[in-house]
Image (cartoon, rainbow, N blue to C red; front, side, top):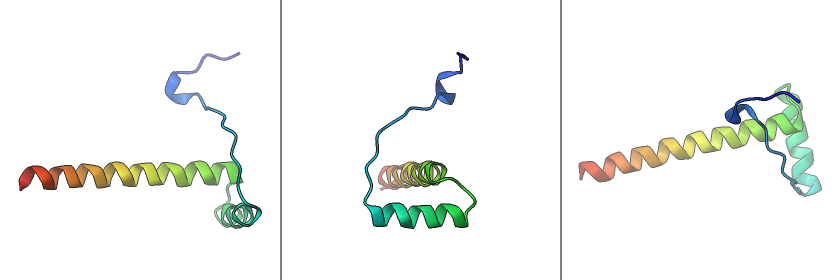
Length: 65
């Protein structure tokens, strides 16, 4: 087994989705030329980036008041 740096290791998690949500994600993934798993990972990554940016901006605003 290959030793990868910790940040490159992928964690596996069980995920239950409704059939309609899965179908919507599958269509979106196909439109973006990604697998469903890749699409979910992409969307979660974007949400986390947005949250970090939003929290950073709100912290800066609080400090300037």
